[in-house]
Image 1 (tube, rainbow, N blue to C red):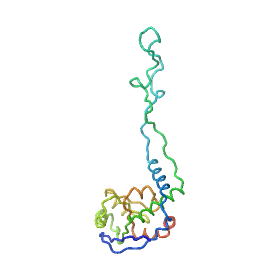
Image 2: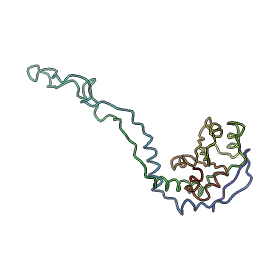
Image 3: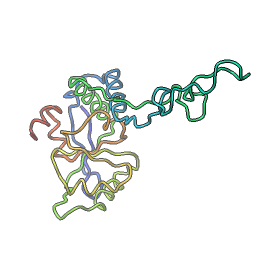
Image 4: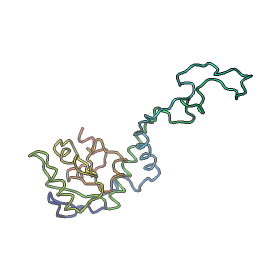
Length: 215
């Protein structure tokens, strides 16, 4: 049973709540988590760099000079890699690098990522933080300052809150996701995980139940 500290909107600790992290599994699946996180990273590769090989370079196939009688080395056309303006050998090539990650692996990795955060004591809960009066970056900044966290932080929301999202987007090293969009890559690349108490309550029956409850 993990102890999760709860903070108010001013960043002051008010209490601890118990959370049964076993809803995410009995142990962290390290190999699965690593495989999925690396796949998320590879799938972000754009692959824009593209060099032309010899066959793609514009130019004639004409032999530059005759084979014999000039005293010079024999040559073909002007497109080989050792000629200025010729093709590039083993240069970068654009392509489609995206490979789909099976849904079962994604789900297992997310559970392991969340389990590791709870086991390592890197989860904080927040209550009383409202943005009904509009976006307020100062509110989130004050909260994180009160918690004492200056490292990378991920805030996970149970549902859509446009004002909350706008309040976070100008803060460095702070990102925000809805549970429906949460993935293992986002969880592990941030040091801290901050959850409104509504999100924490939604996770008590597991990530799958929390997502279904918001559909």
